[in-house]
Image (cartoon, rainbow, N blue to C red; front, side, top):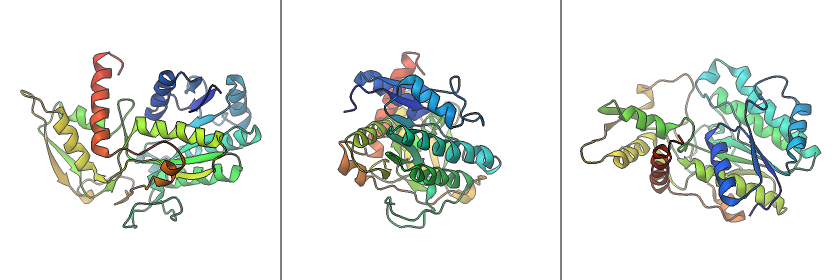
Length: 304
């Protein structure tokens, strides 16, 4: 699919970047990840010259940006950091890639939408982010598109998996000490396994290398769920004889106030990417079951 040309992935410690690294090994790709120890993207020194030097050093012929500021609530009190990592860095990276005629895949988010639409969002729907995080990611989209290079922006959503911090691992950790979990039930979206998000990134890069159209694409799960739905399914997977799982008590957003406002609905329609590539979205139940099994396997091997 991708070929032998070297690929550089930014954001080495993130859950999607780690899935990309694992896929690279499985597929025998020339894929290299770069994390904070190699280039601190949060620093003002991460300018276009430094980003260009990293690309040149690695000999990359394709770049996937999986680095981001993802602390949604903390962003409300740290807007400068959020905009630096989510808007300014992607813009610099896109310009560097455009100057070198190197294809770029950049991950964005469902948080650019406000949830007012009754149906799943498509790429052409107007954005209206409700919080600092969403606005910073929308700014990143604008910067990448303005650079004018061969670039795909992949919006994904509700990402979970074996690596990094995410909803699945939080719920499973809480289940070790609690008899009941209170989980929001009036926010709905399309949960996405991090492995599926990573595979979408490789498919998008391959699309660009084949001369496919740049622009916005969605890469999320195939169907809708609430956070409570996902939590209840995970508790069912966890339950074994002699180790019952906590009950899930469904609550409203109003009962669980957060610093950042959340969208009531943020489902992403991923049919455009599926039509242009061999990537297909997974249903959230099958994805969660596979991710849970993957996590148990990696834990037993001492990997996570």
